Each structure stands twice: as C-alpha cells, then as structure tokens.
Length: 194
Image (tube, rainbow, N blue to C red; front, side, top):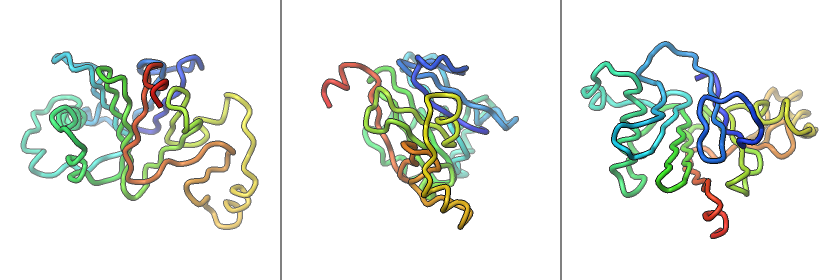
C-alpha cells in the first residue's frame, strides 16, 4: 500500500471502509492480490485485516497458497482468531503495520514492525475513541484542524535530514513505538471502563 490512515468518522474524508466510529482509507501500490485486505468473511467472525507494508511469510506458509486474493491477510486473520494470545506474532518479521478490526470485541489492534520501517503516526493517542492513525504525519495534519509545526523537529530535519522518532514535524503528532501491539477500543462502553 502507498499509505494507510484511520480517521474519526465525522471528518467525512474519502474512505475504503467504515468501521465503528472510524473511517479507514488506504492507497494500493501493488498488483499482487494475495496482499489485499480481508474486509468481510463468510464465517461470521466479523474480523477485518488491513496490511501496510510487507510482513515476511515463511516458506511453510506459502505451501498453503491457493492462488486466491487476500491470502496473506486471511492467514493473519486465521492466526488471530485461533490464538488466545499474541505468541503467533513471534513468527512475523518484515516491514509492516497490520490493523485488525474485531467487531465482536469492538477493538482495533495495530501491530507495528520491529525495525520501524513502516512507522505509524498518531494524533490524540491517549483517547481510543478520538485517536487517529496514519502512515505519514501529513495525512493527519494537512487539510484538517490547524496544527503548528514543531520548530525543533523542523530544525533537526534541516540540519540532519531526519526527525528523531517518535517526533514528527507537527506538534501533537508522533510515531507509535516500533514492535508494538496497540489496542484501541471503539465502543463508548469500553471508554467508560478506562
């Protein structure tokens, strides 16, 4: 994918998928259908998977490849549904961010790669109902509420050619930690429990 972003639904932005109170938008840059998202299922589990980047798939997994669309996303979805914990992530490597939408639990899980090659930036990270996520900070900053530039980060970029993570050149927008699993609740009831 070229990009991915998860915005609050009330922004009325163009979206590929509406889920709970979120609008999810992505741009695809590949012609390989086995990387396509899984947005619905025939088994009634109501779990969707969207991949940004390329998780490494072991040769043993490719032995199950049947030529169908969304093969990789369906394998990740299957692992998620069968596991009672996140140990299956230990087999995952590569450069990626994976978003799993679980309507049964009204949860959204975001999994980031260990190296941070596919960073995910957040806005309003301390409020799971209002958090917004994107693969580039500009996708959260430009065209919406006015956000000021982080002058220290801009100076660092001009001097060193990079901004030190987790910072971005926008105030209030920062990268999530590499190699993490973030859980976001999307129901009002879950927020009241926090």
